[in-house]
Amino acid sequence: MLYKSLQEHKGASRKVKRIVFISGKGGTGKTTLVASLSRIVSSKILADCDTGTPNLHILAGGQVIEERESGETNQAVIDRGKYLSCGLCRRICRFGAVSENYEVDLLYCAGCGACTVMCPAGAVCLEKTKTGMTYIPDTDKGLFSHAISGSGGDVAGKPVTGAGEKTGSRIGGEEWLLIDGPSGTGHSVIASVNGADAVVAVTEPTKSALCALERVLAAANRFHVPGYVCINKYDLNPGITAEIEDFCRQTGITVIGKIPFDLEIVSALCAYKTPFETGLLNITSEIEGIWERLSYRLSEAGR
Amino acid sequence: MKIAVLSGKGGTGKTIVSASLSAVNQKSQYVDCNVEEPGGYVFLKPDLRHSVPVHVAVPDIDEEICSGCGDCAGACRFHALTGADKQIRLSPEICRHCGACYMVCKPGALTVSERTVGVIETNDDRTFVQGRLNIGEFSAEPVIKKIREYIREDVASILDCSPGMSAGVIQSLRGCDYCLLVTEPTPFALHDLKIAVSVVKRLGIRFGIVINKAYADYSPVRDFCENEGIEILLEIPFSEDIAAGYADGILPVANNPEQTECYINLYRNIRERAGK
Image 1: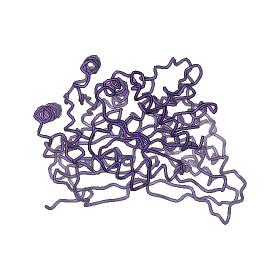
Image 2: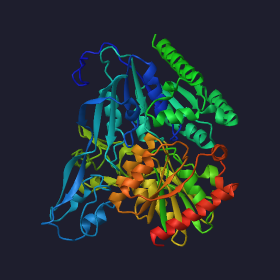
Image 3: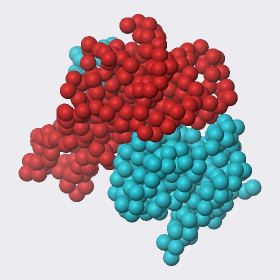
Image 4: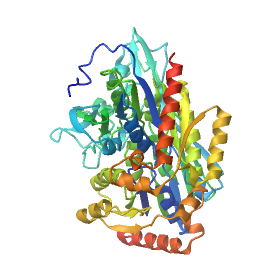
């Protein structure tokens, strides 16, 4: 199959529709849902913007056709032949990155360069270092982009917007961009939601998840992107499911779907298969229903 | 003694493990470092009496003194200060409070101004501490740094860390005596566990594993631990009772003597391995 790399593509005639999947709390099933949708949405590109610990590629599979360094930062380096042991860099550094032996711990160094400004011996300089890699595998379920940041690297924003931007053009006629968003409620979530056509918050019926849902929707709301909620494992606690539905009703958010829990889903995941491949009718019909409702609403909104 | 509880993957059970460890040990402190999404309070139900805002320093530009030279914008590696047409602008949310701009400003046009980025909340005796980052803030680090001021030296502190391996998590691990990595028997969790293990090894902190929700006959997690010589301190079988309790904000140690025994032993094993 011939296809173009993402950078070679030119002249997209219509912007691809972006849906970002977030959760607030980890483990609610966000990545699993995106992977399931990848099995039924034919005209799509996938992007995993959970760059610290990306997981979508585990189910999406595919052979990497392109990889590039994504994100760059600066890190301080102390010249062992020049430093004076005056201690100024250690006192100045707000990140505690300079050890007693005047070695810069790259896990803590934020690359601000304050140490380079004040060093009386000119012994400190900044060097560029990559913060992560973006991989583009071609899978039998469509084109997919994911990025991984260096451990501890503060890459909020860069690979997130990078992965989203790289797949932002319409490639070969794909209609949808499905983004597996970062966890939490911080800047990287907000960066991933910016410019999206819809946000789907995947939650579960636990008190912890409900608290997180309120926070993550508040974070996503900044961009006035239409928000939807999917309640995963909903039948594990009907009481809290009802609370979530009440919350959604009060805040004007549509519950786009409710997926039941089944231990067979766990077995499927361990066999690197998505819930859609379990063949369980109550699961597959709900996932199909979610996509039908979501795509219809977004198609209507675009008119 | 400081014990950090982390995972890599979210949802494996960090909070239930760290809160349970704290609950079975009177002489302990639970510290919620998951400042984007604190969750321990749901289970430990603390009486949060004290609330302290977390301030960070950002530059304030005195436009009468500012010459528009742009040296500060040139020094700012995070592009929080930008200068165009001799007008310097600050985006305070992305300022990392490094101080480089003050150092290069020759006219002295920059003064220190405070912004609030979050809050630290505690109960009376600080056996419960949580940090909360304001929504939209760029970095969790300032809140986590502030939390560390509330860590007590006279009791064991159990730090419930964020998921992932961000700079905020690295900051939480700093100075810890032991890391407890909570995982589950799935491919996602194993993938993220490997990332977490590499970071903890890099930091040179002793660590061990808890396998939570051990329902699936999925051996790769155990195989990985065996191959790497990593100790599995505890395996908690999947239990509908524990899951049901969790959903309602109830810890397993609240109503299950067997689980209580497990966590008491876990705590003792960690103490031995941390050399405390």
